[in-house]
Length: 434
Image 1: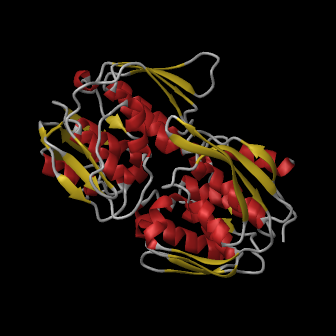
Image 2: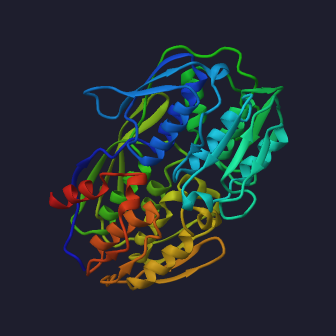
């Protein structure tokens, strides 16, 4: 087994999900919004670019790292973009902003990179059509209805109730943004708990909403826009997850991930590592702009044990499945992942990709329709090629696997990491150097 270990403290970049919302929800205000701790990810830069196209002024603050000042004309004064709204690789940008513009009296053409063009958007766009938005799909993508490029032509929407079959915070958020521009009440019910960043930011901004039933949020047409605001973004637990798993797997490791968001809809990695016997402590809890945050300490405590990740909890950390799978590859017993069919529709088919890569380093894996069954090995041999499929989470998982394996891996590329965590390699090196 490799002699690598991780040690030290680290502040990972700002939370992508919260950064997206801070930028998009600035349009619900009329005035100046200061956002600190923003994610430097390319995905969030795509959101900022799209919001500029709708009429917001977004500027960096000289001498202040990861801080933006947004001057917003307000929701009613957004204007038609002069060109395509290019979401790059960001599904969040495309899905959530579709809801924002669905109630505006103009048309917006959405497009993205080759990967994003393959990802289905119909689960949001079909529902926006029911509210009255006009959706038209164009040729030039992968030829499938429901995928980019497409045009959303806004109209006066009608409020509806939606019972979502999957606990998707992105779909929920898009519908609520549309509901803030609709006649009547718009309500969204999720089948299980999901990240509630939207609800918490609505509270902080002052956007009225009701919770008439469990896992249900209802809104009406926004009557009063907020004025000047300050928003702070916690560190991204999805980014911290890579170092948490590495520390749990590498003898002698101890890391502290600072100021991480611990939203109840985001803590799957903490819950699963504890279930597998890892030494994980949540310390110094606090609240920042309505979001719970904490320092998370992970210490190596011996070999991990098997566990099951059920479909009911998958929404609280679906993006962390690739890195948790590496923990499963070194556990005593089996790590079973269920109810994760959505992973087949991410930047890559992550279930197939994870299974293929883990087999290449010596793990025993079978992938099911909606999950994985991973039998832990005594040692991961490595020395093989790790295929990233131009997927940032697979690339970062590969770098962690390379540190854990007996022999380093050769990754097919690492450029995709810039999509979510540009300084990942440097931060990993700093923890290894300690």
